[in-house]
Image 1 (tube, rainbow, N blue to C red):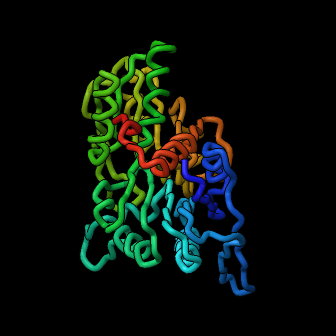
Image 2: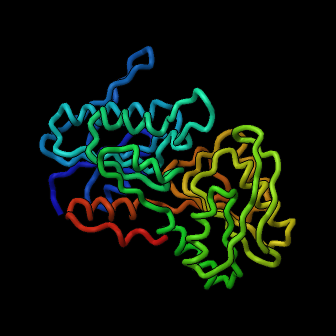
Image 3: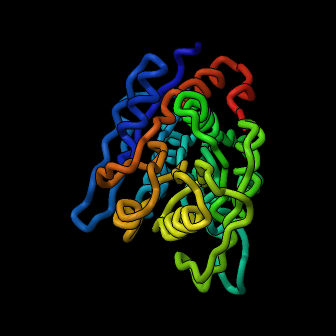
Length: 313
């Protein structure tokens, strides 16, 4: 493996960046962030990156400073003559804004792609984009990893070790493709929650398509925000006769009343990854790390090796 690379951590996901670096047998580089009294900040690499492949690890969840910190670090690396600048964005913020779904709105996901390209990224590594087409917003290579690499072995262990009679479920019709891929891999049935929204983050009505009676339901989704949809879907599954309901959601945004809703829900377990660090502990939430996956993919890229074997479903 080339020794001409360095990994730098953004301030939002330092623990994950350190774990990725450890997987690669190194440590994160020294970056300082100088903060002015008015809130303005300036990242500074405190070691040479000339001619290096620079990996900048940072999820771009709110606040927007997390995204701007990545942009400034990319710009700093470019101006310091880095050979390649790879933005490792375990969670790609603004991904829900992938199209014009009503008049006079921005396409935030495309804007973020433009900003990253303008700053100087030469590659992007991310996980479970809210919409696959976001890859096409970039003119540089995008390695789009899937949390199925982590979730599927865990679900398979539940099926085999605990003898659960599993049915995969999608919390809405938009997640059908993802849930169906899991169901095919595990050779189990599929159920779908059909929901109608009156406005963002509020579900007006919901029903279940498929047989879940006496089954152990696993709801799969790319992210969980306020947990309104997920907890209502879990309740609906129980009302339709499900024996147990758990969920696997890649990105634990968990804003507003999310933690309270999860704690008071019928969910037996919520399994998430560490693409976004949890703001508080919750006994119902289990965290699986993506560090080994990202570390292995980065190692393969440095060695000019294929990463396709890391895509399970």
